[in-house]
Length: 283
Ligand SMILES: NC(=O)c1ccc[n+]([C@@H]2O[C@H](COP(=O)([O-])OP(=O)(O)OC[C@H]3O[C@@H](n4cnc5c(N)ncnc54)[C@H](O)[C@@H]3O)[C@@H](O)[C@H]2O)c1
Image (cartoon, rainbow, N blue to C red):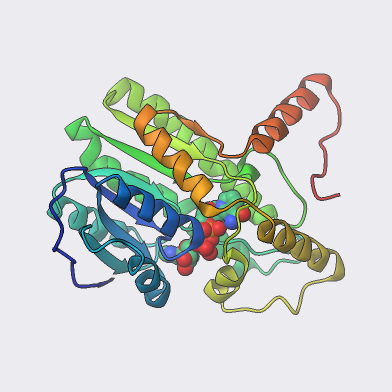
């Protein structure tokens, strides 16, 4: 893992210490800025040194920041992040945010792309949460946050690997929340389910996979184009950052920054109750 030099000009870690993965991206960088404004020291991680440095440069110099390049699919990466946070004064918040999305029909998407999404979106969160709780649970203090998606509460076509991993993260975090209530009640858990958010996730995901999308079949290409258009027309990343900060203050588990996501989830459950067919949100 490549650690950047620690910026230690700040006034200390009075506001606690947060890990943010995927901090070079749209939502991660916005969350980092928000936590910095709240007085937290930061351990910022991403697979891309360039994206990470660009995001870190937007954080005020008064904030203590450590940057670390690594792969969230590697448990050793998370162990290093926790050590860095402990060295900054003690880990209090872990935001597992790194994610990738690659379009394709279930039977067409190359297995490597399917596995990459499981590795980053699911195993990345599992490893990050386990590493954080390894120090938070014995201390009886802290807050683990996972950025899932509205795709963790409803299913769309053309994104089966992404949808599966985000459903898995929602289930994971709900289980973790109940475990903490029993075994470490001072530690909180939250799951964030944003709708469309204006970020470079499409390009970043293709870069992470080392592919272009020129090989998509016409149906998959139509889904990819629609998802990109929806993301480009989505909410500002700051909307999610604000909701995360509010959840850290309130301890709230469900964090749905956009109301349409909750309404979509409600419609799904109503269809389950009524025995009606699920709705294709991209139709
Ligand atoms: N943008 C949206 O519309 C939207 C909606 C719902 C949920 N989300 C979720 O929000 C999270 C952040 O997404 P975003 O929209 O800011 O995208 P983004 O691409 O701007 O940010 C994601 C960051 O994760 C990093 N990353 C990718 N693979 C990694 C790996 N293996 N190890 C470490 N870092 C890695 C990328 O380099 C990138 O900087 C993701 O989990 C995404 O699924 C996004």
